[in-house]
Image (cartoon, rainbow, N blue to C red):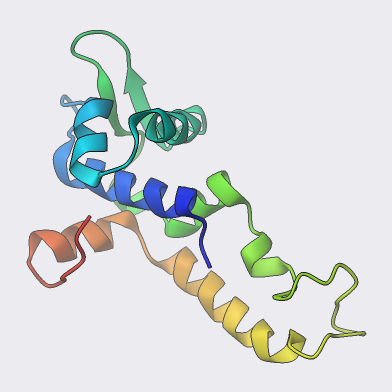
Length: 143
């Protein structure tokens, strides 16, 4: 469903929500090592998120990345939209370009409800929700 790039981006933002602070930035090498994501690939992802103001970035020996806004204000949909766009929520499941409500493909109506529910979930879920569950030990999600 989600691209690996979106998955890595979500994991990195959750990691920053857990470990970075207003005055504390996390270096890319640390994030890369902790999340087992190749540094150059992660760098491109984080720079893209910083360009869209989702993350803050500071250069230099004490630089790194932090959240660009509060974790409560970052919905999953924002990350996915920046990285992959919203095709997952709008396009035909089997990638038919001419599939629409008037002339649907065989999967259109069935997938439409799933697509809508997934979109609503991604709008509702905030990074802070994931970070809190991890902090409180309520989840087995390993970032």
